[in-house]
Amino acid sequence: MTKNTENIILSHSGTLDFDRVNILLDKLQHELSIYSETTICKKRIYSTAVEALENILRHTGQNNVGKLPPHFSITKKTGFYTIESRNIVTKTQQKELIKKLEYINNNSHRINKVFAEKLKTSHISEEGGAGLGIYIIGKNASEKISYSFREINEKQSYFCLKIMI
Image (cartoon, rainbow, N blue to C red; front, top):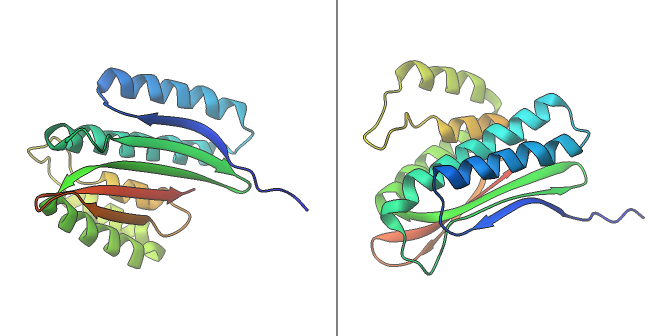
């Protein structure tokens, strides 16, 4: 009987800035070079990591309450990788995330077409993004995206996103 062990590829908890994100992504590239995965698998892991880290960076700054720091990790089990991110979001962001994630999960069979449509109609927001990151994550995921929210107070929640590749 084969034991299905989990290997931690990368893990970070705490404050993130652009320099730290770049260090984590460099480290990820190095770690992925060790594994004999297909190039497409490595690209999916890397682009999902970029989007997850960018979301943490973009949305945590104004929402950080200290008790629940941002978290990012990538683990490998036999046959798949799991990318997990956690950060604080506002209730408004939570509603929008639920809407997008449910849409992605319910349309996974046509996610490439959905992404192409979003790409044509997107525009850069005040936060600096076009809102496409979650769709990129959806394209890369091999299973439905798992997510949860833990209420912090009436204005904020702790968001946990889990992606299988």
